[in-house]
Length: 228
Length: 246
Image (cartoon, rainbow over all chains, first blue to last red; front, side, top):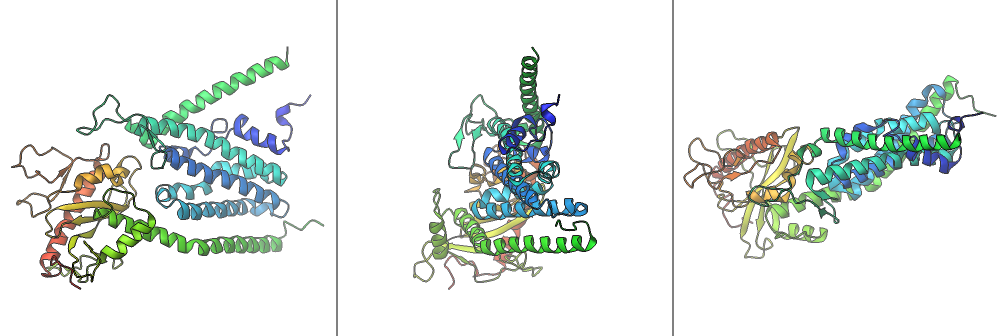
């Protein structure tokens, strides 16, 4: 009897779903959380960062998969990093052109997508051995899985840290009006710790704990059903 | 037939081709978007200047309105300001484009253009890295019209709040005439002025919550720049003559 988890995943839809949830890069593989700490204090900045990562994982997986039979083994990591860097520079150029002001805030972190472990991890583990469509879906799933957790973390941090949602955008909503001496006196005080990177440690830890607890419970239930 | 992917010649040729192709693609994209990026940078800077002079009157101007307002009402000061003692040129800190700007009530050359104020570059080391901005003062150099920061690397949400209108707005109307001996032009943070007799009266702004380092850094370089600007202006009589020198 073969373990279903050890079968190669070749169907695009399945590859995507596995990355999105069962092998989620953030809460199962705990990869790429460096950027999670820095950019997740505002939802809009996080959304741009996530879009950049989704684009990079999808396109670099597709490219590496298309080139997988021509890339020499000895230089494969160099070539993979080159491909990742190209797509990250595209993201940087597009953000600079379309979102000039937000780009000023997140430019440093966009550049760091090149070294994000999720991207290189998917290229090495999947795209370099699988067909283009499945690889692109795998990359897309990893990017979406990352975004799912990061946006949740960002929503909590922005709400508690600034009292707002989608700050600095046309859809900015003040949910909790923060106390400001002499300006607005209310019961709510914004939590400074949520704004600074250490705040992400706490929120991310809670998010990882909650997601793991839930998915582990589901898996246990599924295993019980399979073996009556 | 599969290519001999591990022969040294193949590896070299592959690396050369891949690097050239990808680099060419990136360079093309960069070249195509360069004009838009430059336009964004100019617009950003001009929007900041229009805002620092209060010409937007609190409204969010469209890109076209910003360019039009800037073109009609802002121009660089035609004289270079230099410190009378050291000879250091004030309004050209990097030997680049940061210069003292003049805002007028009407387009220059229309006969009735009166000076609304002067904006000069303010810059210094912040908590992490250099901060750049403009401070606008009234023609008599006694009051602040506004302040704006165009480049900084402060922590988003903490020191980074120095760009927020809520904080910057508190500078409007501050007294920047010569302080008493031992006093400063502007105080950021620390105790609030208790009485009109205080050195801090009319010169105090609350620090940014949780960003004492940034607040102290801004206070330090603002006082330095205001002092330099006033010395340079005093050393060039007529350069800031109230009316625009054509």
